[in-house]
Length: 203
Image (cartoon, rainbow, N blue to C red):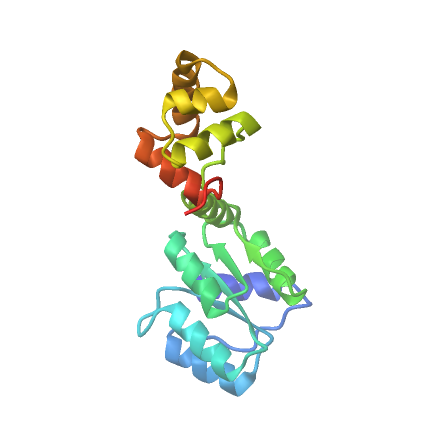
């Protein structure tokens, strides 16, 4: 039924010629080798293998063929695997026929095409990866805070730091607490490690 529907839809577009039809991955691979089509519309779930493996094998022997995945399955892992296998597009069957034709045109122009739902999922995944890998912003320290951090890393006491910065020991305690909060450290040992890591104090 699906093949009949696709055949009918494609026949209405004079710029498209149906070269062949297959119902298994093996048939698709053999036909692609025999007919060398410009483009293959490939399902994911086939009786003998998945369409991603069929895509991989087709492109291995016919690297110039463009492959458009046409599936009901919008799982992000499948989409990513299909793109890694070399597919140039991914269209969901629940979309309109016009979208399929548009996707074919886009691939033939050398562009990538993803259904809206599919591309939204890919972007969401990418954003999560970026957020997960992103480092927290490094706090901007004043020159006085850097000096204080360096003195702490050298093992100086509050009185010594106060004398160096010309502040009272009480003020040093306040600045020290603010500095720890600012750089996210809970104790002096963490402050020392932070100073060394950021190049503020020598090893």
